[in-house]
Length: 230
Ligand SMILES: C[S@@+](CC[C@H](N)C(=O)[O-])C[C@H]1O[C@@H](n2cnc3c(N)ncnc32)[C@H](O)[C@@H]1O
Image (cartoon, rainbow, N blue to C red; front, top):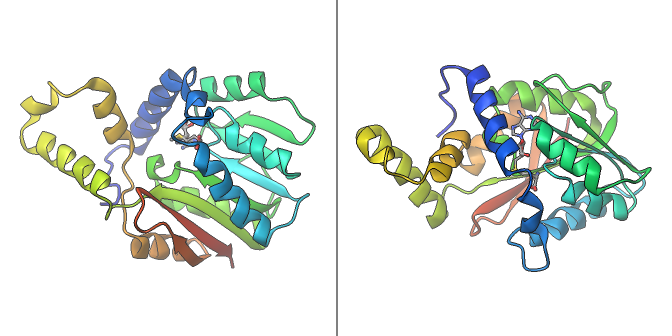
């Protein structure tokens, strides 16, 4: 299900509000027992196998900065950007390093020059953006030819995602049910709109001059896509 959003501007504002509200607690996902801790190496290992540090890397949708900080520790020069101001404030407060910078971005236009980065990482962000094609094109612009993008997105074949999709279908068919659903759940599922199969991601990315080289994690809730800037 690719985004059929009537008003992308309104959608982006809703996503921003949703993640602003989570900024104070997001880092707990990366604590020793946190559910997202495993993501750090899921990004670092394939990044290091393709682009050696030091190299400039964009962390698109960096949240409160954990992946940025982890990659900076590995020696990359990281620029983390996020639409949610509270996330960027939190990242700046938590991490200070000459190898790291954090910026708030208001739209798909990124404040970087063409080919500024050797790579882009984006951990569970692209499912929230609209219009997707514009973001993919802009990410391609700021990564140099031959550079890589490593992104995680929801795997629609995983049972967890199937349940999520069924929940949304249920609300749209019987709106009264949505009124009784937990508010956080409704906000999350309304925000997370780009739910596509790997072959659809491949097509969307190809249109923005990204060639998908591999997809990993097809039995997990999140797949990782590695694409080359062509
Ligand atoms: C699920 S969180 C992931 C945060 C971080 N990448 C991580 O893995 O911990 C999604 C992040 O994407 C950001 N985001 C969503 N839409 C965005 C957009 N259009 N531009 C920049 N950031 C965006 C949100 O504000 C949020 O911080």
